[in-house]
Amino acid sequence: GKMRFVSSRTEAVMSAIRVARAATGRSKILKFEGCEHGHADSMLVRAGTAVPGVPIAVGPDTLVMPLDDLASVQAALELLGSDIAAVIIEPLPASQGLLLPRLNYLSRLCTLAHRAGAMVIFDETVSGFRVAFGGMVQHTGLEPDLVIYGKVLGAGFPLAAYAGRTELMKQLERTERLEPEAANSVSVAVGLALLRKLERDDPYSSLSTQTAALATQLEARCSHLGLRVQTFASLFWLVLEVVQRGDGVARTPQDIPSGQRARYAPLWRGMLKRGYLLPPQATDVAFTSMAHTPSDLTGFAHALADTVNETCNGR
Image (cartoon, rainbow, N blue to C red; front, side):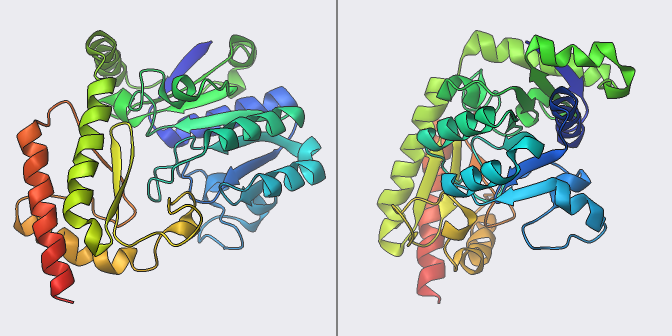
């Protein structure tokens, strides 16, 4: 395959969608609730919701499906499959909570899309180079047609990329109209240096182990107050009330407990008072890193337990 560097997720998604449309001769894109793909107009369409600043004309070319619901996808593909250029999804949805996917769901989704002649785009802006060196593609063994990368890739610099099978990406060479602007050369140099370090150090197993251990500590101290921790590799997300739907695991935005946001604000303030800065939103995902020591994580677990107890007792 081949990879092209750009400066942001939005550019990478726009370019990948353009490649998919050129390859299929189709115009419609199928996306999912609970997944984010940057700020292109077509990616800001929400099911049944008008987005300020986005032309109404954009809406018909973007279909928005519920997550973890193959029947809806199958129905949409049966009805409009010949018009759908690509199905785009975060294979590890981590933009509105860490919504844990079922492997069978992702596998069947790819099968259904390909059967309808649509491209599959994995947006691995968050999961790429984070859950494994090969991201969710490596973790699942699935083969999307195009993949979006960012976040980790840039090592703090503005950098993203999209990659695909060689025959797809060669379309960029055949027509300059598909060619995006190149990324900043300094960002690319930083990104390549980071990738070499990740390949050399291979931190993924230890990161997964320390994240699972942190979740175990947190739940041991706070589960009686309803707190759960959803993890995947080095990602973790604090779920502040018991998930009532399904198997008790949040897999869709509808699974997120109704009290999550109200409970998060005092938790955030309490942790800040103790010297820990949590992500700003109740649906933001957190990460452990190679820089965290066991004592760092134990201290975090103690502080969170104290804060949860304090906020619960203060209600």
